[in-house]
Length: 116
Image (cartoon, rainbow, N blue to C red; front, side, top):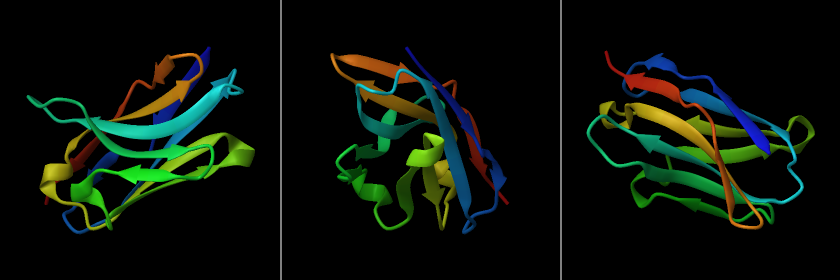
């Protein structure tokens, strides 16, 4: 089992920055991909960014250049740096880990609201 706890969400003004963190614990040996998804009211959950254990990254096309995913191996933490945020970035952001064989874990989510 893997436990994920997100933090760092909140209210931010348009054009501002926010850094989300996902602290992982448990059996992390089989994890191969770490990522962030988001879900806005009335919309489907969508991938924001993912990071493989080999270092490869994948971003939603609309977010490239504004968001950056990274990891701190020593602290078993994955971060999402959000820059130049827009009102349409308002959503619940969820941390997601994928592990062998075909296992998937989710955090409880953290709310990000972009508003002036």
